[in-house]
Amino acid sequence: MLTLVSWNIQYGKGVDGQIDLSRISQTVHKDGLPDILCLQEVSRNYPSTDDGADQVQQLQKLFPDYESYYGAVHDRSVGKGKGRKQFGNLILTRISPAQVLHHLLPSPADSKVKCMARQVTEMVITTSSGNFRVMNTHLEYFSEKQQLAQVRRIREIHEEASAQYRNPGIDLPSTPFEIVTRPESMIICGDFNFTPNSNAYQKMTAKFEDENLDLVNAWTALYPDKLHPTTCGVFDHNQWKKGPHCRDYFFISQNMTQQIHLLSVNAESNASDHQPIRLVLNV
Image 1 (cartoon, rainbow, N blue to C red):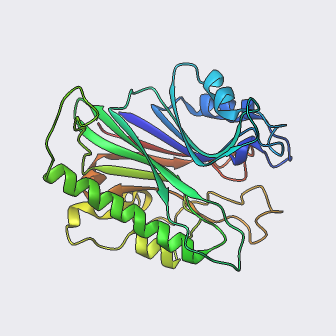
Image 2: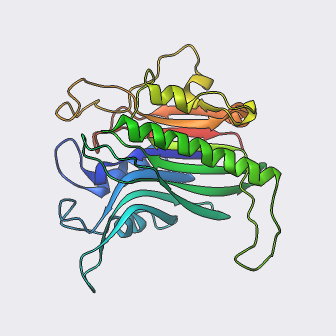
Image 3: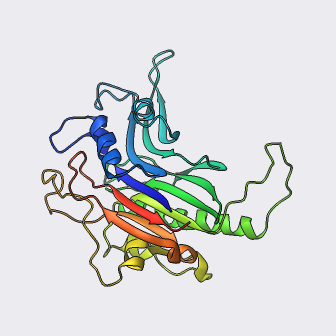
């Protein structure tokens, strides 16, 4: 079995307005430590987030047995010797990845809204029963135009990896040109900032020419007759005035759906405005 957890931790800000990464750690430990932990909204050196703390460093200390891979959506200098301001997504893993790639997602101009850059981190995981890619992301909330463009790019990245897998280039081992295979099997998780009835959700799950590449909501694959559980706004009714709803998912390539063993949502934690979601695979 292999367990993945995805959680938008809102830089550790709980429903009480307090920023406390130890509550994030306690929740994850209580639920059972996963093999791979994918976090969104992790901050470094922003005064508005815990007086400018380096949350990547803090989380590494809270999960000492994990390797950390941070995907910053931007990298901003505050002056020589004063560090840099970064914001993004973090993967903590107990399985050493064969390769990690960071993809900047598109942000087409949209002058009517506030927005920030977005990215997706891709990690190649090797197991005894096969290899697959894990991707961790957080899509745009305020601009549907940008969100749809980001969904298109994620699908392009998936197709690109498949094409490289089927038609590899010239391999030069022990050099930067060494080929690390990007498997067709893929899981992408995170805060997608769209609901199951949205245009972006429909685009995300639309058919590919090759049905093996199709991205399936792991929840609907495992529980086709059950409504999707809420993952956001369960406790925080100030930010989410429309109440509880779903915007956090595991999407999994069609060729991996038979490996889904369990998918659950922790509906009790108020350590963030989102709930942690857990996927267990038979691998």
